[in-house]
Length: 85
Image 1 (tube, one colour):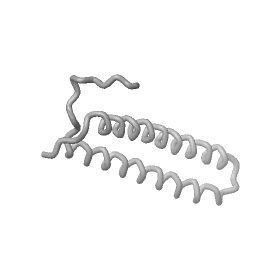
Image 2: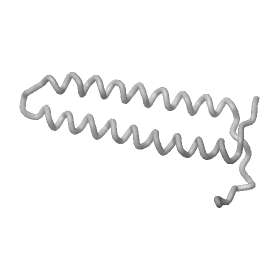
Image 3: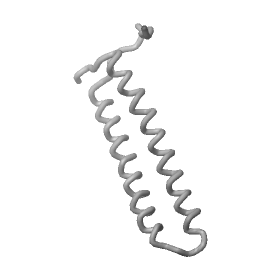
Image 4: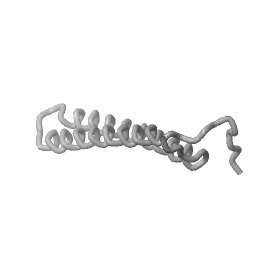
């Protein structure tokens, strides 16, 4: 069983709105990268495969970061609840 930090207080509702704003921004970044990958995949010149790998790496970095942040936020809200303003 996980130990709960009793010194923590619930999350403010306005902070949760900020969490969603962060997610929205990250999804926008991922969409931009996906569009760039789509366009780059039409290019058959030397070096375009490396560019595709770079774009995929950037997308992976953003997705991994968002996954970690979202998991922390979910755990925080689950453990400590929410305060309305």
